[in-house]
Image (cartoon, rainbow, N blue to C red; front, side):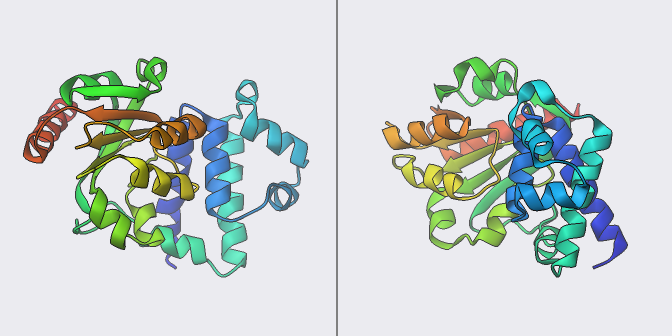
Length: 242
């Protein structure tokens, strides 16, 4: 593994945590992604597990940038000591991936885009998290064909859809009820800030319950056709990059 790759991964994780609305939750998700226990990480960082638990679970105990850097460095060092399996996954998960049958469109932004604007332009009915929409800033989106994703997308590819930040919208098209996409999101430790379902006339109640449990904004786009949705996203790209 090259030093350049590790530096880029470090920047990606550090930036994702810093840009998160819930910094402690983002730290916890990355620790779970690396499959490192709270006790083991605290021991490696030479701090008590209770301190680490407070940072991960208590919004009032938000750590500073210096601590987050130590946290990220510890995750990487522990993984390297274990053979670097997770780092290898991340090194092959960069945003220049070829868009395949599962991923229809993917974009990362250098500056945030208000979730409220996405809701307006994609004509989204919010099913869970309406109060959070006002204060949510997104750093990108990924559009997935839900059928292709559920049938063939491996866990390795799942992590690639997050690009440079989990503070993004996952937009599932070709959706019948929304249950399967949300079950898939539930399974993996990394979570998007927002999920948009395109296609269903009615969303399964289980999908809404999962969104509530995972604190994910969930919405249904009322745009009729997939090309309209993709065209609108192109227009959003132009707005953000203007």
